[in-house]
Image 1 (tube, rainbow, N blue to C red):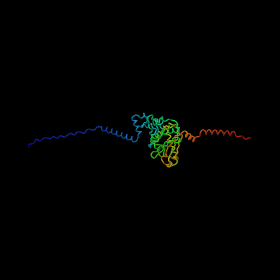
Image 2 (image 1 turned 30 degrees about the vertical axis):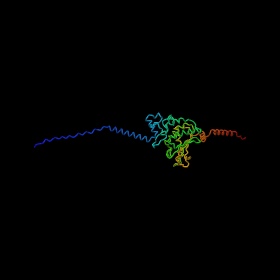
Image 3 (image 1 turned 180 degrees about the vertical axis):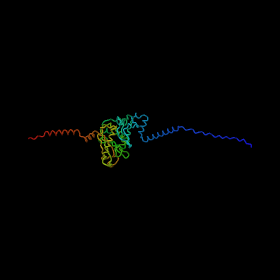
Image 4 (image 1 turned 90 degrees about the vertical axis):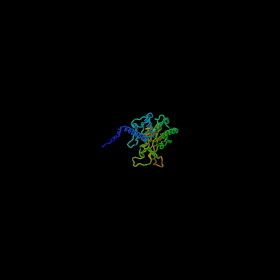
Length: 329
């Protein structure tokens, strides 16, 4: 049988290329992406918890301008005299590290010292306007008006402008700081001071430290009673007034300026028609004229002329006893 020559067909398949082995470059890229996201979240977190002044300090620190402007390092907690306790609230403590100067030059007890910076000599307090303030005794009406204007300037720069009233009174100048429904100076029922109230007292310290007028500090509460008899509004108002005096001295007030600290409880209401009102919880600082200071000192002490009169009276009595006639035997 004849066979036909059939063509031989050879089918060749294409060789599949092996997949290229992956290196570790993707891991480096993913790590860079994770680091960038972490930095973004850190920036967003800092922007959320920090106010505008704290952001300015952080920017100055990153640029290396922190110490040239006299500001404190916001990341250096070792230089701060304020500590955070386990309950998350600032606790007043004196700085372990010795601090020089007063006011903005001194590390006060507050977490953040809310003293504005001026264009010239900002470390002295409120800037060039306050630096021009003449130290000394303020007695006349015109002098008291000037001092009241400086105090109003400090108040307007603080976060408690709605809670403060600076008024001229016959005894001098009264600085009245009270609570309202939105902001309290102290935690309710305790003498734990809020940070913004510390900042206000520290800002007032450099101004009050420039004058030589004596001062009286009084603490007041509302009529809400305490349960029990060991701790009452008398103790609470006294503790708050004493703490206010301490912070003012840290801010620049001289120790011998404050001649009296009193706790008035709820006896003198700021709003008599509503004894439980928040405004009745207040701290009053009275800057005295020399005449008022003499009156207060005479109320708690024996004036020199009365002391001399008492000595002369005793001498006269002794002389009278010696001059008594003797009976004859």
